[in-house]
Image (tube, rainbow, N blue to C red; front, side, top):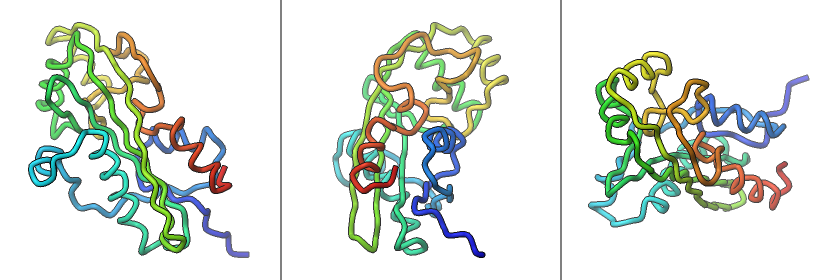
Length: 199
């Protein structure tokens, strides 16, 4: 007997987002979104001035919408994370040098982690977005500590080049949702899933 496709699609290949959804017991499959290149905040905001919260919601929606023609009957979850500090927006690092520079700038300071979330279903014409934010303080770090950290915890795919979950981590403290920093604001997502009987 052919197995039925799960109702829910996660438009992401992020191990952290997959972990958080699996932990909740929700039946889903993860499918990498179809965006060739994710829009950058600075490019987007020049054309259409928006807040960081609005932008991460738009990006989460764009990721989910990239799969909607392939899965028109399914519920699709999209999510994306950015970091904001003193007028600068930080996304995923381009390379190790970029990651090093990010952590050098974040060292010893407080920044805000914004994660957008969306739930869509094309056949039902449902498109809902929301976002959460968490204040995070990074420990004061010297150059060697940054280099050692990046050597032990590769920064690829991580907004701000760090992971709050890392065992020998560099996060000194945070205020708000831990899961939001991991990349999936479950406190915002689960009520949406409940609204449509999906969890």
